[in-house]
Each structure stands twice: as structure tokens, then as C-alpha cells.
Image 1 (cartoon, rainbow, N blue to C red):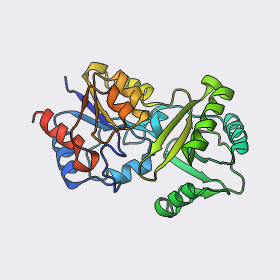
Image 2 (image 1 turned 90 degrees about the horizontal axis):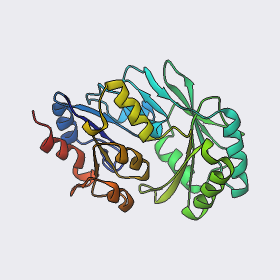
Image 3 (image 1 turned 90 degrees about the vertical axis):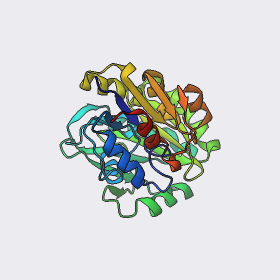
Image 4 (image 1 turned 180 degrees about the vertical axis):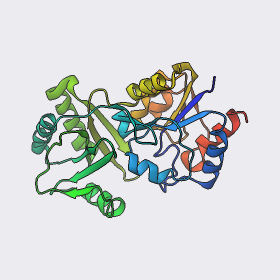
Length: 277
């Protein structure tokens, strides 16, 4: 039976330039003939496809922190979204903290077309991200009033930990297990992301769906990651691997910590050493 290898993208498989090296592309495409290779990312289908252009991607993709699992042919295997009502309620609760989220929603299930709604009031981190990474993104919609959508994939706040940690605690207290709350440091911008999702929208639940779809056992799976949203799948997979630049809390959960970082092609070098041609 072929083994399954699933890697996170940012800070794990992608270099810090948010690109895949030619070495990693070469190794990935070679080893894709001898093992099942895929990804699990906070990124959307469109961004993932953009970053991984030229790579063999033949197996289910875990997207948007686990809110969606889909094939490269855009067939949805699993989808968990928040309702407009709960999205509106979350936004209302955050107003007293003086911060508004991006709202990422699914426009169309056949095309996997998304909207990326931008609030009218942005902090410096949000402004920098939009102006430097999403200025020409066709999904962007600038809203006069930010609100939930019918199929909200996730709400994303950016800011200082001192602001977002109290907000995350408040939202957990108000909404309990009706939402998934993830607070993580963002090393590219030296701030924090607070992501609000459906309670089943995490990489562990998504990995279960991938195993079911491929008829594989968790012990046959190796996963790679660096951040808090990878811990769930670390606990589920047979082998969990942290890149050298991973957060310490993630390294503690890993079966193995690699000596190489994402910028040193850690995942590709492990695949090169491990998968027999």
C-alpha cells in the first residue's frame, strides 16, 4: 500500500518568499510517482493552485484550515461553513475591541469561486497585507459594512497579540463549541492571526475525510507542519514532522523535528531520503 504524505504550505513547504524552489518541485514530481503527495493549508483553492503550479497534485487538497477538502478537479469532498447569522454575531462582538475581520466566503460550489470581503476600517497590519499581497486579487471586495456571508469559510483578524488574545477568549466564552477559534503568530508580518471557523473546520477533521476518500489508515500517513493549526493532524497521523523553524509547541507534538527549515527545502529533502523510487 502506498503511503500518504501531506504538507502544510506557509513556513513549511513554501520558502519565506512564498514560493516553491526548483529543487522542491523536482523532488515532489519525482516522488509523486511512488507515493501519495498532497497539502493541508490555510490557503484557498485559487491561491494554492497559484503557488503550486507545475507540481503533480492528484490527491485531495485540504484547504482553508480544513474548512474544505477538494480534488484538483474542484470536486468538494468535505465543506463546513458558518452561517451569515453567526458571522454577523461574531463581527458584532468584536466591535467593542475596535477591530474588524476579513470575511472569506464561498460564492459558488462548482467553480470554488470565493469572495474576500475587506472591512472599511483596517489596522496597519491589514492594510499592509492587502496592499502588498492582494492588491490585484480578483476575490477582493471592499465593503462599506462588513458582515457575514451565507457560506462563510472563515473570519480572519490581524493584530497585536495583546488585542487578539482577549478577543479570542471572549469569542470562545460567548459562542462556545459552535465555532473553532485559532490564535497563531504570523512570522511573515510579526503579528498574530485570529481565525474563526466552523467547529469541524480543522486539519484533523479534514485528514479524516482524506483517509476515508483514499481508503487509507492514519498510520500510513506522514504530515509536515510548523504552526498551531497543524497540531490536530499531528496527533492523528502515524508520523508527524516539524520543520526546524516550527513553533516550539509544534515541535513538542512531532514524531521528528527536521534539521532543515522551510527555506532549506526541509520537506523535499525528507521526501528524497524516505520515498524509494
